[in-house]
Image (tube, rainbow, N blue to C red):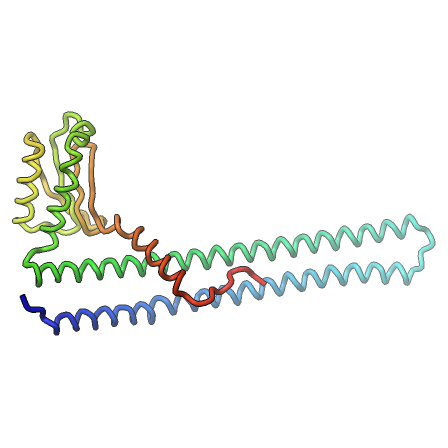
Length: 256
């Protein structure tokens, strides 16, 4: 069996172009948004610092007034001092709370943006891998990905036949749901295998564009699935582990 190296190189070039496009049109806008948010937070923190300075100025003003008036009555002096301290404490507390709130909002925003970008990147990578796998199976093994998925789904169902029957009860309606319509030969294979396991079942095939690529089998209220989503979490965990061991120094997310 020969390998078409031109096709392989073309697939690699397509993948590199995809990575460049993601970096150019997805990752850069996210970084720009984060920079804008950081600038906004810095401005608000400066406002908080100014509020703190104003509080200190109020305290100094009260003390200056006390010295200027040269009050002889200690009770009046204590009342004014206490008022200045209370106002200072209130302004300082307000400024501290504002700084804390802004820092928490900033960290939450950075976390959300990073999570959205990571999730999108992982899904695009997984979908690209699925496309390459489909072509590889077709070119090298003369076997469609749908056939492999169908056989894998049947292998998952076989050890769970009794549990599925118990969960389904008296239901006999069996449905196979896929992202795209399955070819007729694949439907025939699945129908034959399912009827061999559930002789009384009525097998139908449906498509659901909202479902991830893969197959889902339903028998009454029981179901079992093998889709792309089942690998997304594992892929995400693996990539995060690899990135955490190979990445350079992390950027601190705590506000100064």
